[in-house]
Every structure is written in C-alpha cells, then in structure tokens.
Length: 421
Image (cartoon, rainbow, N blue to C red):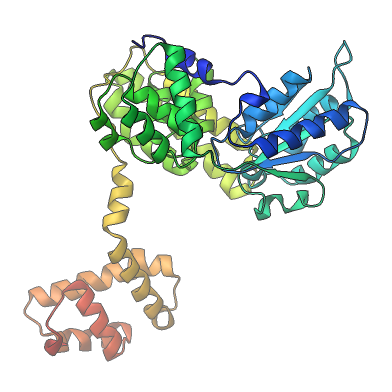
C-alpha cells in the first residue's frame, strides 16, 4: 500500500552509485575515466552528455561528483541566461576549491535549451569558462547537433546516453515496487516499460499513477511527454502555497511561455472563486504578459525572470483559500478560436495580398479595415437583391478591382454558385 508523498516516492528512485545507472555502461565508464584523469591533475576537455530526456544524464553527473567527493555548482535553462549572472555564478566556482581542497564539478544542464535564449555575450562567457577553468565541467544536452550549441564543438568530449531498454526499465520499476512494499500486475509494469520509449522518468511517473490499479489502467497511460505536462504544471501553480514550487514547475514545463500564459488565463476563473483572489491573480498574469512583451520587443530575455515569477508564484500566492479541484482544466478558448478560424484567416491573408497592389496599403490594414468595409458592401448589395455581376461592377467603380479579383471577394463573403460569378 503506497501512502507516502510523491516526493518520498521520487526519493526512492534516485540511484546511490554510478553503477546503479542502468543501460549506459559505456557512457558511465567514459565519465569515470574523465574524473580519474582530472583527479590526477591532467588537463582534460569538459564533457558533453547528450541523449534523450529521462535516461540518467543529470543523475550521472551528480553521482560522479558524489563518488569523487566533489562539490557541485549547477546552472540550467530555468536559471538566468545573461552573461553577468553566468560569470558571477560559474567562473569563481570553476577557479576555486572548497575549504578542504575538494574540486568543484561545474554542471550546466539543458545547455541546448539555455543557449537558444542567451543574452548577447553569454556563449562567449561559456567559452571563457572552458578556457580558464581549473575544475571539471560537464555540459548536458538532448541534441549535441543543435546549432544553438555549435560554439561548443571541438571544445568538449561528447558522450552519448542511449534510451534505456524495455527490459532495464522493467527491472527498475520492479525494484522500486519492492522498495515501496507495493504491488502491480506484471502486465502493467511491462506495459509501462514498453510505452516509456526508453524514458525512465516517464515510466516512474506512470508507475506511480498505476500502483494498485488493474491492467486496464494501461488504456489511459499514453506515451508520456518528456517533461512536466501542462496539467501537472497548472496543478503546481494553482495548488502551491510556497514561492519556489510554482517557479520550478514553470521551469520544468516544456510548454512555451505564451501558450502557458494562455492556459493560466483560461483556468484562473475556474480555480479562484473569491473575487479578490481572481483580481489579484489576473493582475499578476497581466504583469507577466507585460514583461514577456518587453523581452520579445527588445530581445532582452533577462525580463523573463520577472515574467516567470509573476505567472507562477504571483498567481499561486494570490489565493486566500485552496481552489476547487473538482473542475477540470479547460483548453484556452482563444487558441480554440484561432484553430477553428485558421482556414478563414488564411483566405483573408490571400485576399489581402491580392488587394495590396490595388489599394496600396499594408496587409494588416487591409484585413482590419478595407476587407471589412468591402465585405459589408458586398453583403449589403446582396441583401438588396443585386446580382454578382452588379456587385462586381460596383467594386470596380469604388475600388478599381478587376473582375477576377471581384469574383474572389464575392465568393468569400457570400458563397454563390460559380455560374453566377
């Protein structure tokens, strides 16, 4: 029977030694060789651990430090990406040792994601770190061939982590069940291992959801996203009562900032009933949108630090009471509307391009003003019983629109049989 909190459950899943990392023996061996060389005082290139999410890259880096009694200085994509912050946090740690002479292992996680959002000069600060460091450095990425980290090529020793085999994942899950004193049907364990596609993290999350369930639970256990899914992220925001948990949830989410803000906006009224809570949460979300727009306009992504805090902890701590969890989360209606009107908007763009050479105005203005007026004119004429031929002549007189273009416009606003055009 599992009665422990999820954090304790995850704690049981953390390996204690490098040799406990299954499925990537060659990578683990290369990491040990790197550490032994550095411990002997040899100058060796930093490591780049790369491979899919959930296969043990970050855990291996931490266990390497543990086995060699090194301290860890860490930065990931959720941290600030400006040059000044990186140099203040990482450069001193790369040059110094602890009070007892231990080395510091510099771990830069999700460097491929981090680099895509760098401020100017941030990549050069990492190259400076590599050149001047007297301590070991480990970079971690999913895609070593990403153009965002092309500046690291030739300056790191790349070590590939492979997806974990189905058999190894099944072993991990069974060992975990034994540690918990819990049980699950063998078919459930095997099914989760198969559906995980080599991702240990998603397999463990699925197992937690399925403990005590029957084999039929596999019908609702899909192939999981590699990171925290949107509903988990929303739960961490709306149910949190601390400052840090919502920020970590946003950092762990793979949902783009603009999309995540749409989700939060749609579901604030479904979670917060108290008018003061609702107003406060929407105000914080408005500030997050403001900082997002500033960052996008100026290409200065330091403002994202304020955006993240406002849309996560700001919204979370706006509540005076815990929200009603019975109501399900709703997909953002604005995105639904955009999806349902996609074909119509595409057609409007095509018509605006057609009219640009005639009206001599920008596409946005044509769509928001001229196309609206033309549509109103066409519908009004049609309601008065005018034929398509007469409407086309009116468009030619007023807008100098040729017969073919007029036909396209009439079809868009009042679809008619082709013989009438």
